[in-house]
Image (cartoon, rainbow, N blue to C red; front, side, top):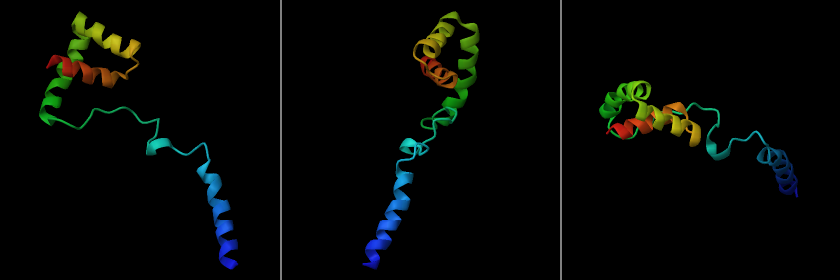
Length: 89
């Protein structure tokens, strides 16, 4: 009988936390800044980052592609830069 009462009390204290709206979903926070992926060749990623930034500022076709990614597809700026890096390859 004592175990039943104790388990009932423990269950009632844990259950509201389960239904809380402040619980992060999928174990990740929605407020984190987007980052470049660490997968792939590190030296290639480093070598392509600055040329991609320069191309988005000075090349009209790359700038249009970057604007398309940011405005139409809703990507963050760093994600669009990463897509431009892949296009430069």
